[in-house]
Image 1 (cartoon, helix red, strand yellow):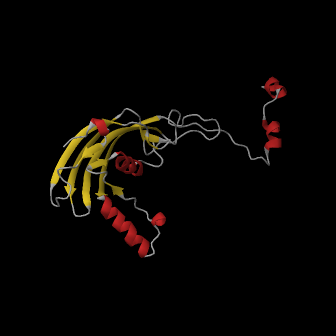
Image 2 (spheres, one colour):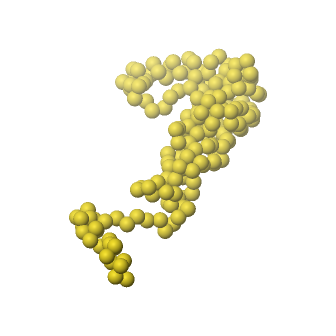
Image 3 (cartoon, one colour):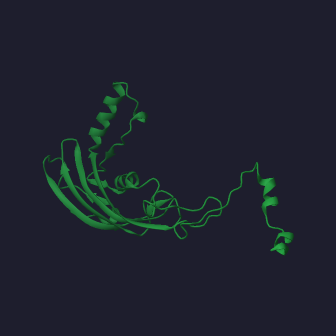
Length: 198
């Protein structure tokens, strides 16, 4: 079972699984990320390889997809702004419902007083015998990415006053004068008369 290029690299034909509960197949292939998958700070860049190793199982409600997504991410450390490259491995599990089962569940939800708009889980539906995994993979990857990526756990970041990278100069500091005493700072500064006396 492989992705069909005419339908897109993320689309699988599930013809041999549909309506046969208990039937299971494995599918493994590599696709390129069509666009950035992630946030402004860290993401899988466009064109980066995404490996899919999935198990597809026919159940009464539809086709259950579970497996692993592997790729690498590029981002920026939120403390020091250095580039961050990380390997990513995400487990996913989603049900692609048969269209009539999805319609039935929506009808039941409507009669029970549940508001579909407040439901947290989005339901994925098979398109005939085809399942498009792009959105499922995107959702799994985005939720697995760090909210604030760092180049290393103990990254000291940047100086808040001058922007110097603190990892390069651990002893970096600025003499801060209390504003209440700033007028007296000029009295403590050496003058030309002091230098002549020495």
